[in-house]
Length: 384
Image (cartoon, rainbow, N blue to C red; front, side, top):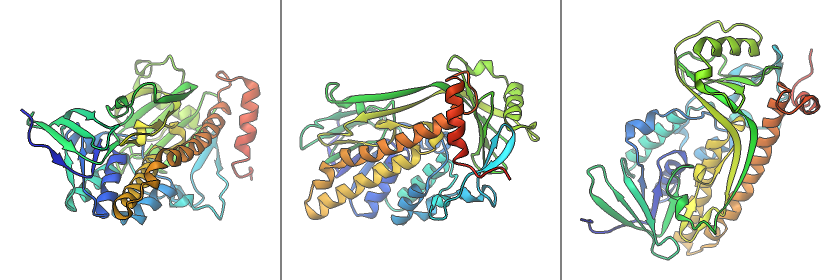
């Protein structure tokens, strides 16, 4: 039996960075919204994801008065000279642009940001409903969309609204509500993967990248007691091909010296590197944001920042519609976000190819390696 239909201004499907940020932005603007998240609070607050915010992402949160949700070391705190880059075992340093404010970025684990966004949203009176199952979007092409779901008790619920924000990730239901003949998917496959390894060992310094003839490697902080290791590998590799001892040995090889402190490895996964963009990001009253609309190479570390950009653009558009009865920003939402997304995708492709092609020539050949190495040398300080 279906309960009496409720109504709110915005229904947000998905309680990740994009959905929670949008909810907080709207709540601070006095606009009613409900966030539906299919998982439990405990699950959402502890799932491990990427952990960097660029300067723009940090600024967005600060401009909305959400400074308190950003935790972690800033980008320039990796060392006094910046984030080290190991090239064939030799320590090099990125060129620092005095006019560039990227040092304002932060190595903020995604689960920490999510946990803080949840805490602030609920503290300030937000409506966040966990364990919302069987979410279905109806009437998104009309002026009266509705979202059906089952709550944690199994009761059927209906939410009427003016806007639906689809922030439920790449595998969520929101994007599937858009007719197939409306949506176009643009994809780029890089031809290699990362073995991603979560370890119970802190990273010191917080971030180190390495280019080596055996492939790219990195170690990034995931909080005071954990770090994630990334190793470039063929698409055909599986996690089973990488026992713990091989992970630590290979990381030491690519870093140029054995790893001094080892510890428990809690998870391993092989992730193909690719970029994906869906267009348009709007259909009727449905607006896609975050991973529901695009995936970016993890080399760029911009997934969270892209999600925050989408959330801010949509929040300001909704505010303008409600306060001024002006739909112009909503009408331009897809165009605005896609322009930004493609610019960041272009930068991500350049960085990904430079960092990977300049190491292991077996993927793209020696010619591309030489070109990538020249590009990389233009980005780092000369050898002293």
